[in-house]
Figure: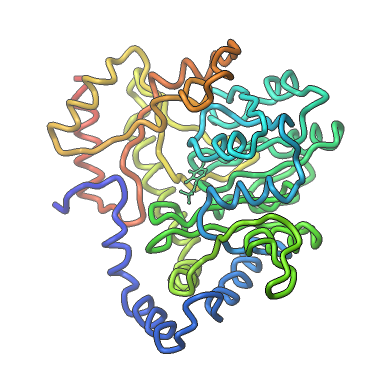
Length: 375
Ligand SMILES: *Cc1c(COP(=O)(O)O)cnc(C)c1O
């Protein structure tokens, strides 16, 4: 049996090696390493795939979130509402820009932003909402957009874990996650569903003025060569990464299906185990399973992990410390956040290996390994 890994980017590469190697060589031959044709082609192809007007590539997903917030002209002290139950990048950039992260709770089933908690968090200082499509399924975007509209707030979707996911509105309209808010931000970190062979990220929007501004910010605030109108940063996607992503984008839907079938296999196998709550898909969203995250009920999680580890089955905790308890937020920690779902989920979530290259033998072995803990 092949060694089981949380992600297996090597085997995925080998399956498309000829295509990828040829694309990389094309960039090498062109010597257009920065802002080459591959970057423009990828932006265009991704825009077409997502059904969005503007795609602005940048250096990574964290930069994408930062550039989005910089483009909205938020002032120090303005409040940005985000879940605490997410990867640190979502909330870190809020603090980096001297804005105030306001943490809200998540839904215990979908792990995405809780609407009641969002409503309660809105104050006159609130300027933006950053929902996260955590683990690969959509936050309740229809409700979030309605609340944002009623309070005149911006919505920046953190789509780093959900590229390819479809959200269905109550009137039947379908949109890709990342294209519903004013701005979508994503990451092409190698282990993401659409992963480069290095860092990468992108911003999406249908707003022409915002697109222009974000492209400027990502390029030193430059409007014309050597004319810098606003303070920006330097955040570029390499041509080589773009060329690789261009190939992988053509496989994205097939990758999502492979992930869904792994998830389906696990959930079917664990259906009879009372102590495992398998991940559920909300009815408005598909799920592209960036992670397969289950909840362990009345289980000693340390023992469970040690049991799997002895069988060389890796698993991970995403994330062991929620944002509102991270030291980096200093003063804000004193604010007695009331996030009961986040606090209850943190000690009981556990993510199993899930990627596009898992074979039947590995899956059967993992399921046996998990089941044997409960026997
Ligand atoms: C990965 C990730 C990011 C950051 O992306 P990088 O490319 O690593 O900077 C942001 N938000 C979420 C939810 C992520 O999973």
